[in-house]
Amino acid sequence: SGYPQGLKKREIPQLARILAVADQFAGLVNPTPESPGLTPEVAFLALKTSGKLDPEMCMTFGKILRLG
Image 1 (cartoon, one colour):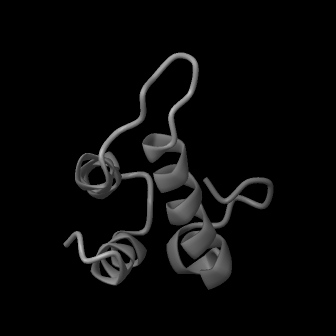
Image 2 (cartoon, rainbow, N blue to C red):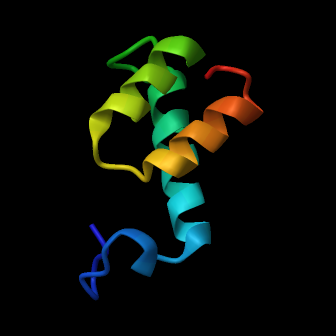
């Protein structure tokens, strides 16, 4: 969301965009008391289709993990 400065797209620092993807992925695959966690493939699909993360960073992340 670019909080707190209202930054958008490439205005958001690259490291922040990378960490956002990694953080979301970790949240999806790691089990919690409420959820068993998703498989890496399903979690990656959720990241790609969320529309909330940098698509380029999602694709690079998927390539690194050999998911996309």
